[in-house]
Image (cartoon, rainbow, N blue to C red; front, side):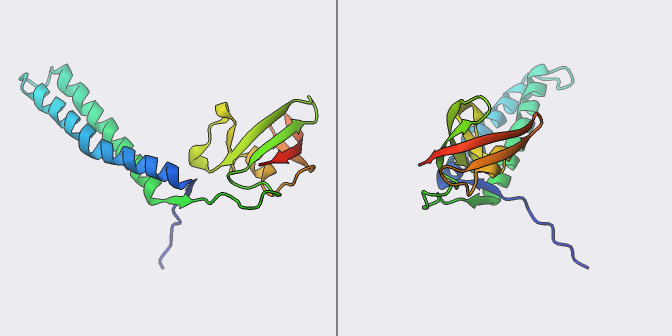
Length: 160
């Protein structure tokens, strides 16, 4: 019996995918050569048992290989998300202005794929509870978001 394991897909824009490919290329060419050179130099210092430079270079190499593997996984399992053409409904790529119905505060968020989320600059993932609550919402609608503090209610003011 064969069991298929579904690889996780990482939602991102074409621009983010290209950034990852560029970073992967840099790590596999320039950075890998730099680390190999550090190891070579550290070996030339003699006894490896008490050679802290060698240990540091090997640790750096391990981190580099882990980072390369991580980025390769993201690139190989990337799912390109297209910006929603519909401007009357919230989708990926939408800029949504919302009002917190409890506090009255208004904020504008951009809905992005999971690999581009950065809440500090109001870029939220469509996979986050807040993002999921806004997806497919329309101007004037009130959405309810489950949060640890309870249910939060937001009115969608505008969608760009």
